[in-house]
Image (cartoon, rainbow, N blue to C red; front, top):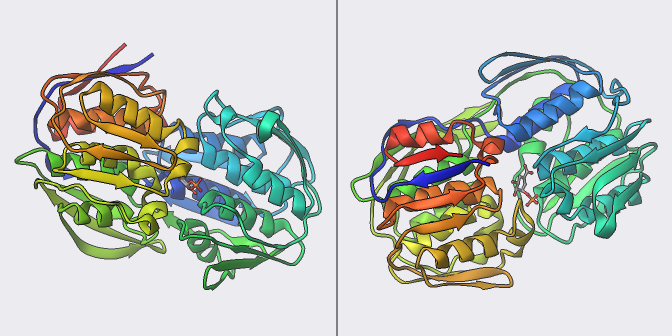
Length: 433
Ligand code: S3P
């Protein structure tokens, strides 16, 4: 088991380039594997989650080569080219891999079984299993619709479906199943979610119709291989945005960060809290907007986080809770019940940790109420959740004494090199076993 020790204080400085976007990395492997021809990917996140997606397609006969840091070349043979895997497909900690993969596997003429680690095996899958069954797949799950999933794919029928939660994973799962389905598949979204799948399907030459909150594709068309340049992950950059905001004297520039408007809720929320964030050099990279983000320290203030921004910042709440703890006044988060079914129960894990560090924080069913205050240091449990571990590492910057964080190995799922990158920027973090 890997633990972190974080010294109190410090400030962040310099120009930083965080690793590639996790969501886009998964999708580049999936679409490249289903396309016709050679897809060239750069900026690929070599984290455990996206590597599990890659391994799954290799297991299904796709020719994928890693050519160097972040460079991946896929020799795709088209929509119908996957072969039965030689055994179970193991997806580690990755909910995105499992939910997106379920859509692909539902469209195959072979049977498959997918499972994950203990965290993934306890996450809800009914949200994708039920609609895939409606499209014609036969899927068995463990108790309460948990993984492992046994999937008997086959002849899928397109349909119009309205998920009960705002989730890019559900939408993407059904769009991927829709590639193999007869007729049109439409997803009617109940809230704005990341649109990387839609953008990338278009980059691979497919027609994706967007009408208001509905997204549709017609099945059967081949994807044409392309070049995908993956920007840095705004969800990884978020740790440094908060870190630089709360640590006096900080001034950092995060380079080439993906600023897709469905992902920039963290910037909007921090600005509402009074943060000094300047987004510049906006440009486009492979169908996705990117920019450089400069953050300088300021005194943050507590806010009521607007509920409509929540889905656009869903992965950033662990570190936003740290921002709230270091802000002046009270911060309230509502409408974020999805946090309870992420890699850990992120509401409980964060509130427990904050209380441990001396902060007045209370969990609610769908969020938390956090009083800004002084953080005393102490011991916290990350529950094996990468974003909880990194959030508490950042908390060291406004803590009065050291923070020890347990069970941090899963930081490698999304942010390999976190410790050295953040130590170079000025965080007093080190690994202990
Ligand atoms: C993701 C969607 C989000 C997010 C996850 C990645 C994606 O999950 O939390 O980290 O890549 O589609 P939900 O779709 O469950 O909100």
